[in-house]
Length: 353
Image (cartoon, rainbow, N blue to C red):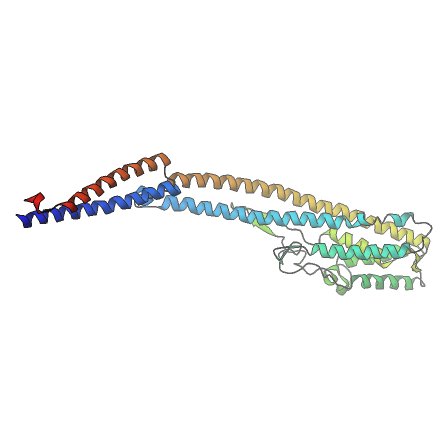
């Protein structure tokens, strides 16, 4: 009788211990649901397949990645716009139109013009070498290569061509035809059509991806490539550097041109700088349209990501009221189990005889 009673007590105690462990596990899960708001029984909810949830998470990861990539592109576009505006502003620092009004050939003004032009060249080259995270902005797809040679021989090359034309005119150019011939040769240096390739803009100054190569682009996620690059070989930049090199190479008082020839030369140089301004503004406008496109694309991706995150949350997130109710119920059951276990442990032979 005693043996049977003890055996029955042990069996009952063992069952209660098993139930208690299961209750404690469910209680811990409910505490977690209340604490972090995530379902503890997600596997039970999904059943045998988690594919829908995994698919949603994969789509959300793609959208998040697209947003990150477009953020990098937007940063590069912003920096490109700033660099172009700064380069265009070089001619605002020193108004080269004043050369046309300097009829009296003010002493020292020629030196000032040359210095302003030389400084302007250095600023443009430095600005065109702008980079974001070590990746250059105006090198095309050669993002690891600075597009401009900061130290180059282009000023000396232009000066050599000027000296050659002055020498051909007996030591000084005196006609507009002679000046036009000089300007045509210098223009061929900057548009890479000069018969001597060593004098080309792309040899002396530019060292990024070839001018004819594709610009940078990114995918919009739907198979469409969006081009957003601008190389330092574009006409607006070439014209700006050509005009600055003209003023760096020739001054009114250096004896290479008479008064009439220099006025014609200076007018052409100023026209080249004006043309460069229009060209650079055109690049800025083109990039501005891309910025509008990328902003719209980013907003679309952000909206898609929000929808996906809400759908994932609907699956993963626990209902706070339901979780709190379940926790309270499990707490009551645990208390009852602890009480029952305690009573069994207090049983003695007197209780079972």
